[in-house]
Amino acid sequence: MRPLTQLRSRTAVLPYENIDTDRIIPARFLTTTEREGLGRHCFTDWRYLADGSENPAFELNRPAAKGCGILVAGRNFGCGSSREHAPWALLDYGIRAVLSNEIADIFRSNALKNGLLAIVVSDAEHRWLLEHPGSELVIDVAGGFIELPDGGRFGFELDAFARHCLLQGVDQLGYLLQQEEAIRAHEQRHEAAA
Image (cartoon, rainbow, N blue to C red):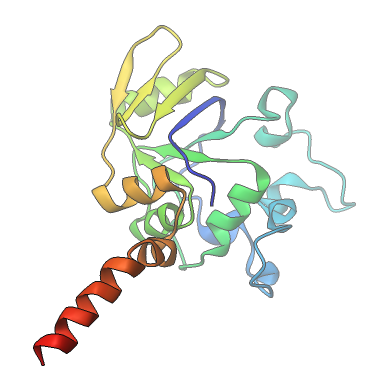
């Protein structure tokens, strides 16, 4: 994972409620544990027409959404079955953050563990974000705020461990490996005391 201290990007908006993990990446693409390449299947049933061409009506296929690293989603984003493939697909597609007024708990946990910011904002903040697609935002992970184009700010909460891992660019295993020296010292003290 890459450290994520600050993200500056335009927003793409998918205003639909209850976008589940099967919509993010359909179950038929869960045959791999490789993260690379999953982005081409992200929202595949919305993104492509039956002939395989891009669906011009799908919001993320529109020119204004190209290159946006922040997804503003409708309420209850990431509901449904638990699958790490969903945040992997979003990350591989180029999304680094998802903002909504409600994000399913398991999806949010999986996202944060894999380096995808999943931020819950208030209803009023969510409404503003939905009404202003393409806005360039700055998300400051260390400071816990989202800066709007006019300089205004929305605060957001992240648990301390998730924030640490995002800032350091490590997952849970990477965090444990960072503690290897302290763990070894603890084991040696424990053995000496026995």
